[in-house]
Length: 638
Image (cartoon, rainbow, N blue to C red):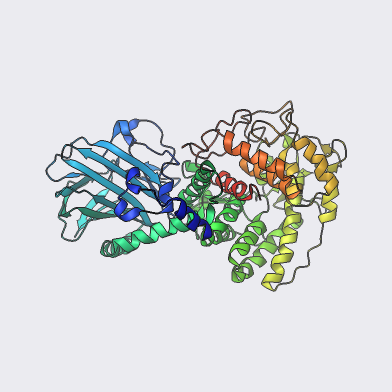
């Protein structure tokens, strides 16, 4: 709270109207200091590919502000974000003009701003200026507010671009429903008359000055009834619902921001928070809890993955702890009887991948949530499941029973085993083969330093969580074994090891994990520090590429064969910090913040980046990149 007070003191002279916001209502809100940290302007008729939407509160639908050169006087959308149903429902289902204008009247944009938790635009015609604000009340309800100082009623209109949508008017609501019973409702103020033409509608607001329209999303007849009742309630108390959404976002930012940081770093942190919340998706179909998808901008990422989820939860624990809890729960909903957490899950369980697991960081997530919330009931709920998962590794992924585990798969394929590592095409796996442990359990013929370091950290955290949960914990301590098992004196680095004892001499970021997990001795950390700060290896333009830059197989855009992945960057920088190398850790962090293209501008946060110039590579609006940027931000200078 002291940080927020500091912000307010600094902002005392700020006038919201300068940003296009009605200063009578919005003065002083922290969120309004961070307009347009992300550029998501897009009009569906542009013919280009949209790569990001405004969505909030777990909604499976999104909107964009229209592009200035293809203006529509309304927010574009909604767009259906589900993996198997990604489509624009409408170019702009709620467009607006004055009552004495033709619907074809051309409006000129004055101001367009994407704030945390809000889209705002203002546009003018010869008749006057109309301001529009769009927020999400919850996962199934958005609220549009239109206002003008002209004493004229608003004319609303719009239509679907999809064939096969059934339209109907129910009192003051216009509904579009598909063959599966899923659809959208627009609810206008009471006494509003609506004209429908089958694909669209037209209506006049009953009053002048300010009008609200509730946009509801439903999946079946029952949720339709609930949505319409909710819409009625929202229209009765719009001010209180708007205040709840504003307060939610103020709390996100209060808990996330460090006011002593440079403004460009604070904008970066806000962008990361906005990305995580935009990727929040509510329970739906075969997803039984809310969670955060890797990227709402890419169809195949509209599910929940194992180690992504743990990383998301650690960041969310600080500013959205209830969502963090559900992010953990949703993966454990599909824990197997043997204790395994499967790779990924979707709203349609037929799409789930149970061929492999993912690196074990679940205890790290639960511990982070506990440290923030002190919720002992949550620890008691999750502890038995965490323990079962920990034991699963040693039962199903330790081929020779020596207490050192391997990544593997349930179907015997190397492809799935590489997925289990999280580093799909890593150079260290080029010569790997599979060995069978038991029915349904295969291992690589390679023991991995990162996996076993994660397990050692998990051991330490489970011991702590057991005491909090009041449960027994009797797993063997393999920490000392792991500390020395993978370390090689020459060149002073950690390497994977084949089951026959030979080394996999590929210098990669997996060697950061013993430092981050606080397993390395002082001497081992010092030896690794030399390689991590070598500009020919890991201290590149963007630090910590996934493989040393002088490796002959290094590929700066080669997925896990050289690019920058921000989870690995975090493990490397945080590992150095934990070992006392704070100056280098801060220096590397600033390089990341200052050099990744688009990061301090309006570009989205990406899945990975090119090592030598910081150019974005794969999926935009990426959640674990955002989570780790927040962790780096919080740890900078500490």
